[in-house]
Image 1 (cartoon, helix red, strand yellow):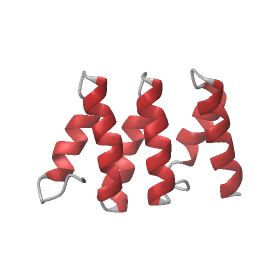
Image 2 (cartoon, helix red, strand yellow):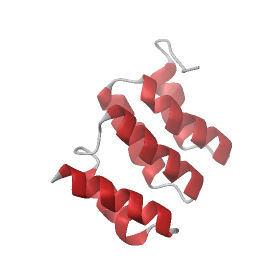
Image 3 (spheres, one colour):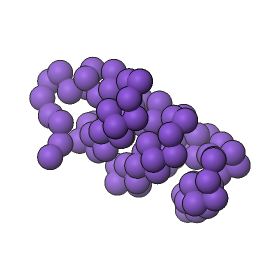
Length: 99
């Protein structure tokens, strides 16, 4: 399930910066349960992650929350410099759909 409650915003923001990728994955998914502002903050961190799995889940959360426009610059960056072709093409498709 989703992480909820009044403290969840700060918990998820901290989780997005955790040293363990499994915790960062949970934060990227948990962003879906947050308001747009909080989700954008969390996903901004997740999209910059050095773990491809975290970035992949963050991209899915961006779609689920319809946050492509506020994160467009991050998506453009991923479309050019992601560690895998799959991430690059996913981000590029998302940017294309924003136009």
